[in-house]
Length: 215
Image: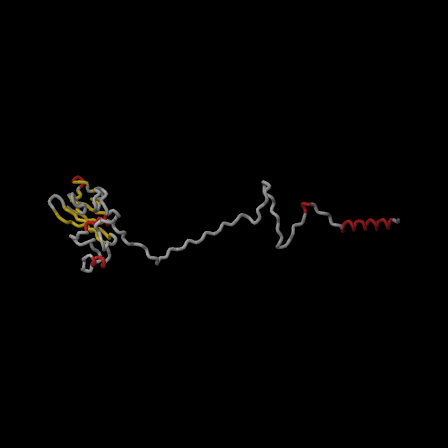
């Protein structure tokens, strides 16, 4: 074989070698392409199978329904216990306590507390106040159910435990002459004021009335 033939043979072998692609190793496998390709997740550190799709999504909480502003609310006065002595018509809610000077004596003044209900002109007319007033006592003066109906609304005094309001002078309980005032011995709706100051009479539910005494 001539030298020229040898060179031609060597060139042919080199071209053939370049045309054959190398076999990629297991770590050089090409990744699939395209939108539908799925890339496998690597195994977890503890060897467990990987969780596909990420952590589960918590369900969204259901919206809380809004309160209906037009829904009726129960504002009725609960009935008094059986045998209390306060019958129909039941008084509406306690509006305020009217406090006034009842008697002026040389040693003390007597203050009087009157619970008032309303505004309810229908109720006031039904129990006997026919002058068109909307606020009124629970019953007219001298009515046999007045004491029971007042006790039903006002409750008991915190210091004496008797039915009626709790009396205070300048924020302190009326415990006797040394405090400048004392509860009437027979009627919790009366107090004897021997000293001046701001007198308050409060029901058990916190509704109060007040009167300034200057003596």
